[in-house]
Length: 427
Image 1: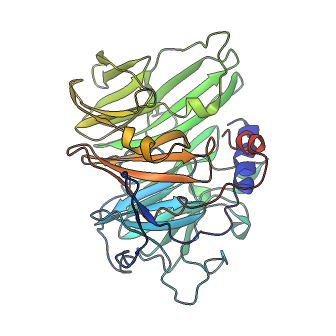
Image 2 (image 1 turned 180 degrees about the vertical axis):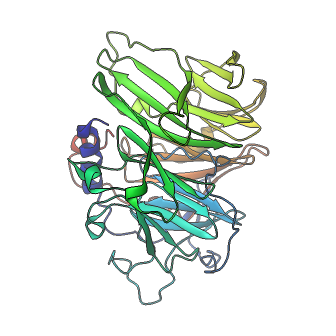
C-alpha cells in the first residue's frame, strides 16, 4: 500500500483524541426520548465462556469502517473496537460494556487495562478472542495476540514478521484470517503469507507477491468458504483505474492462482480517485459463488464454471451480506433494501427516523449484518467524526434502535480545525 495513505491513518488517530475512553453514553431511541439508566448494562462474558467455533466469521460480513475498525461475535454477543478499546455488546438487548472487569482500573493506562487492544482485527476462535498489535511494546512487529473472552489474560501468540519484513516503514492495514489452524496475513503490503497458529515467523510461507511497480494503491481482504481460502486484491493503477482480483490460495505461491477479475473501471476526468472510496468494494463468497456489488449492479460469479450473471440493477454502493441475503445501504435514498441472493428484492426499510432525530449526521457506514439485523454507524458533525451513533436495524420487523452504550454518542468534537481532521482521516 502506498505509504502516504498509512501515514494519514496514523495522523487521524492522533487527531481523534482517542487516548481515553469516554463514559457510557445515555440511551437515545429514534423518537428522541432519553433514558439515563444503565443498570441493565451487561457484564462481560465469563473467562471460560464462548464457543470453540469461529475463526473466519463470514456470516458477520464486517465492513471495518473508520471509527469501528474491528468487530466479531461469540455466543450471545459481539465484540466491537472503538478508538483502541474493546466493548462487549449483548446481542439480545444491544447493551454494551467496556471489556475490563478490573474494579480498580481507570482505563487510562494502556499497559494494564484489559479493554485496550488498538487493532483492526478481532475474531473469536477456539474459545479465545484474538487480535493483532504492532506497537512499541512489540517492537513494531505485527504480532498475533489472544485474550480470554472477559478481556483478561492478554498474551502474545506469535510474531508474524521476520526481520526482513521490517525493512522500511509499514503499518498493518489488512485484517488477518484464522482458519483451519492456520493464520493468513500480510507481513508486507505487497505480500500474502500463512503460518500455523503459534508458529515461528521463519516458517512463514509466501502465497502471493504482488507486482506494485505500476500501482498507486492496493488493498487486501481474506475470505474462506468450504475447503477453500481466498484473498481479494483491489488496486488503483497509474491511470487511476480500479480493478479487483480474487485469488484462490494454495499451499505455496506456485499453487495460488487468480480465479476472478472485475472489469477495469477508468474514472472520469472530473472524478477524484481516493483509497477511501475504493475500500467500499462489497463482496461475499458462499457455496462456490462470488457475489459482488459493482457498476450499479448485483452480480453472481460461479467460481467453478467461471460464468457471471447480473442479478439486479441496484442503486447504492455499500452492501453487507449473509449466506441468504444482501443488505444494500443507499445514502441517497436513506434506506436499507434487502435482496435475496437470487437478486429478488424482499423489503425496504426507511432510515428517515434516524435523520429526524439527528440533523447533524454527515455520512453513514454499514458495519455488519447477522441474521436479519443490520448495524449502521452514523457520523455526526463532520466526515469520519469522532462523534457518532450506532444503530441496530431489524430488517424483518423494520424496528430501528440506537444502541444506548455506544461510547462515541456523547463525545464533543475536538477543537482542532475540522479541515485538518478530515485531511488526516482520508484513509
